[in-house]
Length: 184
Ligand SMILES: NC(=O)c1ccc[n+]([C@@H]2O[C@H](COP(=O)([O-])OP(=O)(O)OC[C@H]3O[C@@H](n4cnc5c(N)ncnc54)[C@H](OP(=O)(O)O)[C@@H]3O)[C@@H](O)[C@H]2O)c1
Image 1: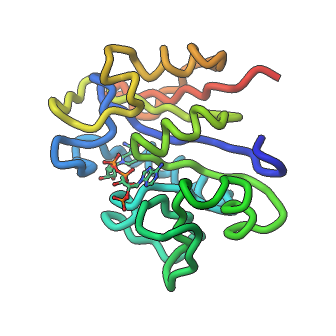
Image 2 (image 1 turned 135 degrees about the horizontal axis):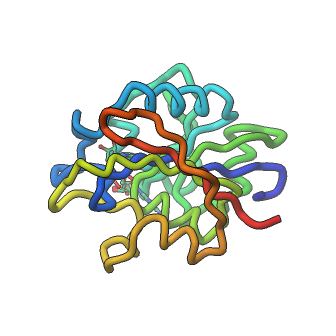
């Protein structure tokens, strides 16, 4: 928890621990309807979705409340389509309170630096989908530690998180979803 906020990360990774291709785009091969359905449902439950500037601009969504991480604003800025936040200028609790007063569920939707940032702040849950037969050479890793040879699972376990059972989302492609939880 960060104050009254419950923090859930959500990612789908390729077999080589990537969240995007070498152009920092989410490729078609990493899109699976069952995964998109669960991710959209989580975002619908969230008070606010936190994501990096690139993902925000690549995937506009004015229906949900977003907190966009970027070095562009000095601190916090209310723009027409979203809240923009520079963590160098404003703390996380202040930013969440501005975007979603009163607390509730926060979905952290990446990319790599944002996933890293909340790894240090602490996830309550991390919903990790995996498409084991997809590879994205030169793509964007889920966490920086994946660039140094760790799997996303190892990174989360290394922070003391405990994996639940793997749920099969897409049997034909062997896509699974594992929820990692912080110890209580
Ligand atoms: N497979 C998945 O689950 C998944 C998840 C997330 C994203 N994606 C895909 O991955 C791609 C983008 O990922 P990405 O990692 O390359 O980019 P990203 O996180 O979407 O955006 C990177 C930008 O976020 C800003 N940023 C992040 N952390 C910051 C910090 N601590 N302080 C200041 N600014 C910060 C910077 O913006 P400024 O340059 O403005 O400073 C940085 O250039 C997208 O195509 C998206 O669709 C996939």
